[in-house]
Every structure is written in C-alpha cells, then in structure tokens.
Length: 198
Image (cartoon, rainbow, N blue to C red; front, side, top):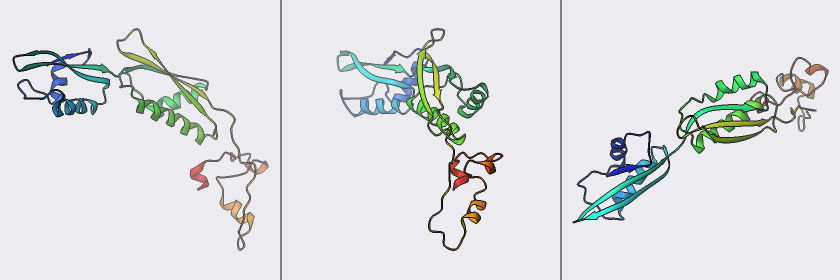
C-alpha cells in the first residue's frame, strides 16, 4: 500500500486510519475499499480521496491511496469595519494558524460575525469570505472577511394590541431594555436585541 498526494501526513498513519493491511484478502472494487475511503473521510482532513490499483501480480494487488489535503489557515483579516470591532471579532472567532479550513469553519465564522453585528443593531449585515493561497507556506490559505454592516436598525415605535387590563404605559415601563427611539431613549439605545425583547 502506498500513499500519494499528502505532503504533511505520516503515510503509515494514513494506512492505519484506512483500516487496510498488507496481506488482507480483498475484492476490487469491494466493501473493504469503500470502508477505507469512509474511514479517511471521517478524519475531515481531505478534499478528495481515491484508491487506485497500481499493479496486479500473481493474485496480489498493489494499492495507492491518493489524497488531496484540505488547506490550512495561514492568517485572516477583516475589511469594512473599525479596528475595535476587528479586535472583538478576533476573540469571537478564535481562529488559529494551521487550523484545517473546512466549509464548516467558513460557515461557522461567517455566522458568528453576523450574530456579533446583529447584537449591535445592524440587522442587514453582509459578509463575503475570500480564500487566497499563501505562497509562503505549502497548502495554506489566507481568509479575508469583507464586511458590510449596512444601516443600524432602530425601533421606531412600540404598539400594543389586546391589552385590556394593563395600560400601554405599564407595559412600556416593563420593557426597560427595549425602547423606541426618542428623548427617553437617549441613554438607552433603541436597537432591537432579541434576548432583551424576549
């Protein structure tokens, strides 16, 4: 069994993870090869996995496990926002160098950025993620987050319907953290924060 395409992983470990062993009786194609590919997919380290027969000889078969590794994170940056927000987001995302860049990592980080700005009252935030190969490190990429926060959404007016036994004023007082914009909201922001509203 040989391993090709992977520069950074110990080939013996790859073979061990595949569950294939020299001397196994197998059929080609067959269940053992399918299970080996599934076992390697579970590692979430690769963007492509193939097993090829490179040679057949007197009832023996020679296999090559060909892998394409997922890229690693070299660095990341934000554009379109002020520095203090960039610092907050670095802590929020907790991305580290050499992390494996999966589709899940990109989606999760994008959702965290959106949630961060929604909490600040920017409910129309848009995030574009770019991936650029880093020429200084093999199989590594730079992630760029282009952020457009849009207009801040404020509560213009709060109306109540169906309250027969409690006045609007009492209900408004109870909504200390959720206020309409106006003179009384100078010290309390009028952005809609879902947890406070609930």
